[in-house]
Amino acid sequence: MFRLLMASKKDDPGIIMKLKEQHSKELQAHIDQITEMAAVMKKAIEIDEQQGCKEQERIFQLEQENKGLREILQITRESFLNLRKDDVSENTSLSALVTNSDLSLRKS
Image (tube, rainbow, N blue to C red; front, side, top):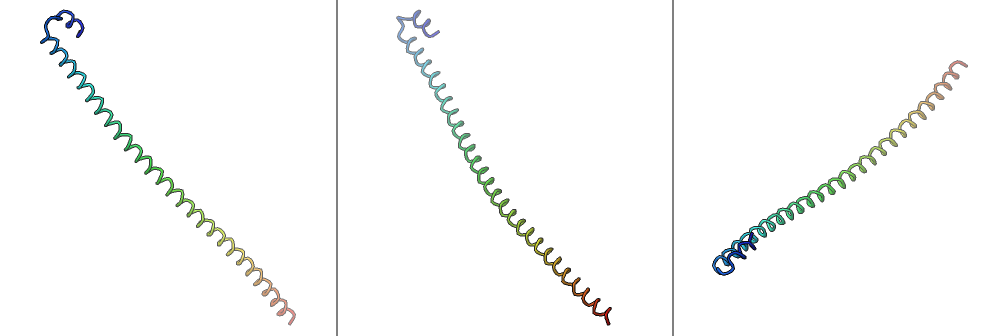
């Protein structure tokens, strides 16, 4: 369209100047839109990266908490098993004492 107007109005410098100004304004409007979109995209990328870092930190914290809880669970299991062994040993010892006492009493 610009070329058609230029070709038909070759001799009128005022029209050519107006067309160039209009074209420049349109180009500047497009440049402004592109610049604005680039700024919005940059901000979105920054927010996304921050969110990604927060998620990574949270995952690390949860992994550390999980590791600690597993250690506590293992200690609890070991303590429980040791208590059971001690109870079994004590019961066995007591059974032997009772049996010996019973035998002594029966003999008398």
